[in-house]
Length: 183
Image (cartoon, rainbow, N blue to C red; front, side, top):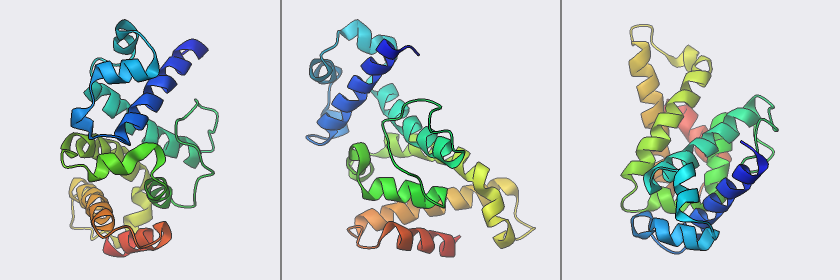
């Protein structure tokens, strides 16, 4: 992606997150994103087929950032999420959620968050696959790998929902510890 395309994509992401701070995802229109980003309709659609694809790309951006940080690939591409990383990829993810980076909490807590959670869960699956060795000593050998992976993913998602639902009073470090204890 050349610089101009990257700047346009960044402008779209910035407008999307700004609008998320003001209203629910389902109420945001492509027209509002276009107006806020000061781009043409064709430009938007050259980057994203629909608003749902924009949401999917937003989620992929979060996980791509975490993977790049984990592998010390800071400059693999410019991310909309910026930080120094953490010892644990799961702590890293909880920290971004805690800071409400790019209004991610609005997406997670919204009433129609099913689509975001589906995209989030798909990208989380890749993250969990890369971290399975972390949980290997906890896995009963009788469990199929696919069941074990699904259990870890579900535990993370439910831990996240519980944390948000209870006002995020625990620190990212504490909620990461709870997650590890629950797996």
